[in-house]
Image 1 (cartoon, rainbow, N blue to C red):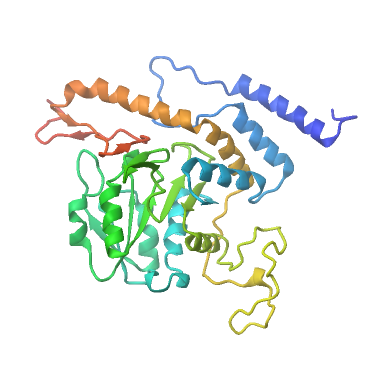
Image 2 (cartoon, rainbow, N blue to C red):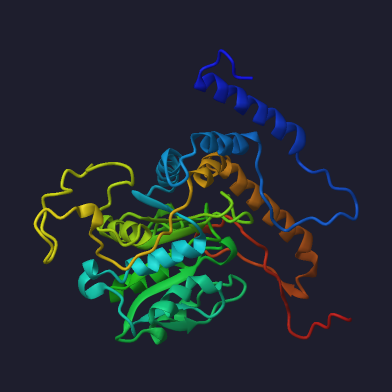
Length: 366
């Protein structure tokens, strides 16, 4: 099949076949009356499949060139300096929280017994890392119909042990970032935006419209299939703070002190010339571990899918907004019975879901 072809020519032939295969056998499903329609699923075409196969042919099984490309392009899209791809949104939250426990942060580091303000109604992995570490969640109620944190309760939740606020933008609807950011700035608290349900949402703060996840100290995303875009499993952690990025990278990569990429030798130029504690002078920096970290990296094949998804992402956001408006208009004639979701003031949500609350006194049998 590949006689008289070099590797590049053989690869292009394979990718051409993949393109044809996807168009023939992965066409958009045509629904007929009575079929079940999932609330969310993958939206893709041959580009994702070709990227996936292209990465597989290289057989670089861990993070590689597609990961580098994805981190760069997501950072450019969001307008943040540093992006770290991880293996899930839950891992992104774990990575973000643990970064705030680093001794590099001095007195601002989170210690066991410190308190983290969060909401009483949310996805568990927003706060699971804090509980696992030994921090104490302080729960604040949400407002309806925004389903986000009631900012009038923030001061009541504050104590001398409070170190951070870590909350999600519920189903793509941004919380009141102006109030929460002002509260955090006033009390010198970290703000972690769980942006897993809200990638592409925007919020206007101090006259400037920004993406959610970029206004606090750290933002997180999930790329599980029902989310705004997917790489199968996967997530990301992002920040504009160089020191926090160093902590994030270290905790993601086993707790390693060196932030040079795997497989790249001595990019920093200081691999063998520093003193680390009581270790011998010149001890290999690649094997110095300054945190009790994890291995939270994703594979390059996942990132390859993510790169193709990111090209389509703006259209995904517009489609979600269109679908939300269509649902809201269709249900407007029953607002005497139900409470429909409302965007937070100063926001442009990238909707993840459509939450409906039945009003008190309504009998489902009536």
